[in-house]
Structure formats: C-alpha cells, structure tokens
Image 1 (cartoon, rainbow, N blue to C red):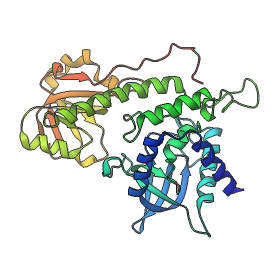
Image 2 (tube, one colour; image 1 turned 45 degrees about the horizontal axis):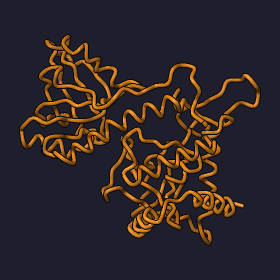
Image 3 (cartoon, rainbow, N blue to C red; image 1 turned 120 degrees about the vertical axis):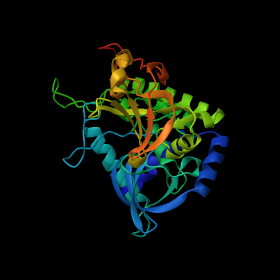
Image 4 (spheres, helix red, strand yellow; image 1 turned 60 degrees about the vertical axis):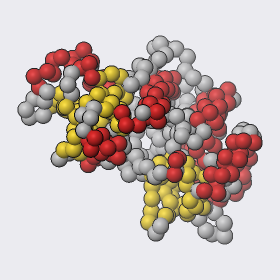
Length: 344
C-alpha cells in the first residue's frame, strides 16, 4: 500500500515534468547531489536526515506546506494548523517510507543552490531534496497542490519558471490547497482554519521583487552593496571603510538606554547581525519613513540603507546619517480588496 502511494505520487508528478533541456539540468543535479538517509519526516516540508554521522534538519526551499495538527506544532493566523496540513504530513511520511528498500531508510539527494550551504534562522539546512529517481521533491509539492510556490525570500534559485508554472497548473486543476473544498468543515457554517493565500501570494511576490532587484544589483556592482544576511559582504564593507548600500529584511526596532533607535536586520548568523543606529536627537526626522511598518505582515519588509559598516561588539553596525539614506527595496504588496474572491 505504501509503495503504491509512492509510485502514484511519482507518476502524477512525472506528467508535468519539464522539457528536455530542464531534464538535462535535473540529471546534472542528481549526479552532483549529496545522498543521505532520511531519519524522520516532521511534516510536508521539514525532514531530518543522517549526514556525516549526525542528524541534520532540512528546510526545503521554495515550499511552505500547511501546519499539521497537534500540540507539538506551531500555528498562527496566517499559518494555522489545518486538516490538509496533517494529511500532507501523513502523505509525506508514507511517501518516504515507501521509498526505503529492504528495511533500510529512504535515500534522498540534497542540492544546495550555487553549491553553498546556507541555513535559516533556526539552523536548518536550506536545500532542494531529490527522490531516488531524481524527481525534485520541492517542485513535486507545488505540482501536486500540496504547497504554494513560496517565494517569500526570493525566486527559486534553481528553476523559478518551473515553480511558477507548477503553481499555475495546480491552481487551474484545483489540486490540494487550491481546491475550494480543502479544509472546509463538515458542518456547514462552522469555523474553518484556512490560510489567506490571496494575501500571502501578493505579499510574497512583493518581497520576491525586492530580493530579485538586490540579486541583480549585487551581481553587477558587488563592491557597492552589502547583504545583511551575508556576514562576508558586511566584513568586506567594514574592511573597505567606504559607504555601501546595505540590503536586508528588518526584523525589529528597539530603543537603547541612551534614546538611540536601533534597527535590527534579520540574519541566521546572530553574532554577525547588522544594526543600524538612528541617533536619539534625530529620531523625529524618521517618523515619515514609518520604519516600524517594515516589520509587519503584508507590508514590504526589505529596505536599503546607505552608510559605512563597522565592526561592533554585537556584530556589524551602521550609523544612519539621515532619513534620505533609507528606501524600501520593493513595492508594497498589491493586496486584494477585502471580501474579494480567494485564489483557486
């Protein structure tokens, strides 16, 4: 039964595979992947593997399956625990169990875009996962409607066109999360736990535009920009001692004991975080910027700030020389009007 489930899922994904050129790229990724044993399936997009004698937690790129049910799993207004999240987690457990052979765990391939290992703020490895036949599991989740195309942190670095096309096809076919009946309560009129995908997609797309604009600029003028999530670029900027445009997601703002405002940028390397200091005597000049809005859901969260980066006891620091040194890195989300039809 489990093997049949795995075969069925793989067969369905195969119907929407990319053209020959993309398949050649997929074959190259399979050959270059790092193959490891699956230790545990936490949910649809979080897997634990045994790697180099230790357990590693994976966070799959470009996907974000719904939260499964149970006290050990988080939930929020924009990502509540759902019945479909539980179904997806059980499906994933069965899929990987069916891929094991002779009582051995399933082996999967890890693909790190650009060949560089990166981790999220929780220490999980960010990667694509390949199934034994080379199928990209991340892409398969979107193809089957088990996950939206999650471009909140930028377009997929391997094949953004394939993910966008997979989402369009899944929505057109009303698969999984795109089926209006998904997560509907059995009792008419009863409360339903559903993710607000119309708003989320608009928010993620606005953020993705900001990230893509940064990527293009960083590729063309790398010495003039710094990435708040990349300590190496901050270190380079600090060593140069010249002004750069720093890019990043604002995590939070707080007031220091001396009255200065600190804008903390998000990073997985907490000891190397970038902090931008707004002097207390000039704080009023920044009110029109509404920097606090950069920390809110459904708003543009990425910003550029120009200045000189310095090493500090807390990582990296920049002193803001004025509100004109700041700008939002991308558009505000084009949110649908309240009460409009949800995506499906």
